[in-house]
Image (cartoon, rainbow, N blue to C red; front, side, top):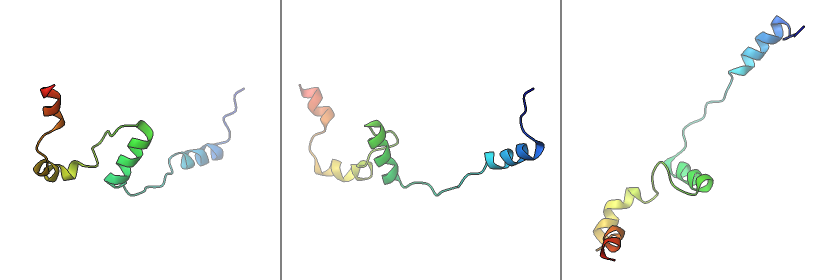
Length: 70
């Protein structure tokens, strides 16, 4: 009544079912770019995170302190 194909066809389908191409992992910069483009926000990090200490040494006030002073 319900023909699911011959045994050979089923074996071919199973062989094709789990084939995939393994690629190397994206760089952090590429990942952040795609997140920002697709979601509008950063999920896995922020582009300026690696510069945090340099930014903190150059600035005298943070946005958190500005918000607290209002």
